[in-house]
Image (cartoon, rainbow, N blue to C red; front, side, top):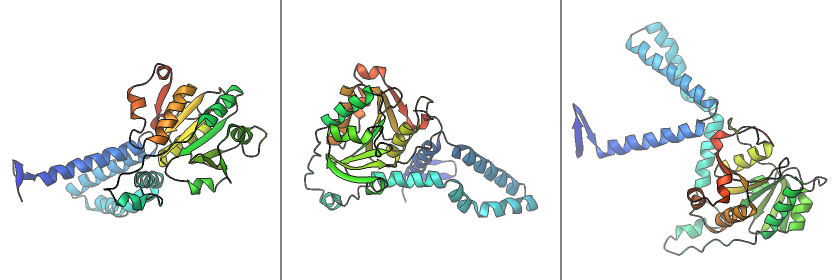
Length: 296
């Protein structure tokens, strides 16, 4: 083994440096995942107890060391039980970033072939319907998916499989409609299902001006590669959730631009929107999912 350098009696190789770097990245991602939740306090409590255990062992306090050792012996099982929501979320995030979509997985195996760009669809009916719904303070929740039909979530509601139209969206979200309570899932220019139940974000830091509709949109965007459009029932304002972040108080033009970029470009991920906000976007707020609470 070729050592890169030595520190005292320690001989450090490039593999050790890479190992420490990867562990640091992993710990940082775990911290980001737990930030803003009760899990951070539990994690710090377990860490403190482990440090006490090390001190007790070093001091050769046999009785106390035996008691703490029994607790540490089941530490992995206890961590799985205590951090079950965070572990589940972590695995969902890994699954979201892994492209095993049955429609394009085998195509992606042939990396030398040029991939066809994603085709968007006409979102004018969605924008027009959102403007009308916002004008009458009618709440709406519309999920856009470009890679998957989201069958698990679609089956939680009523299957429709109809082409997008303004009249259909207006009928679904009408306050007297039995389908208005829930989300609409769209895929490839079609409404796959309505009255769908979305996972709710568990973050504790959402502003009080946002409520269950926004929390559900954030939760869906945290664990799936989707974009969710929210029309507030109280204010009529438009918001968009993507990758666990919320863009609030958007204009119809901003909303159209962001949805089109999501549907037609798999690489940019709204980076251009974040780095170069338009004049109208300066009046909107970008809220990380770790800063989420309750509301509309």
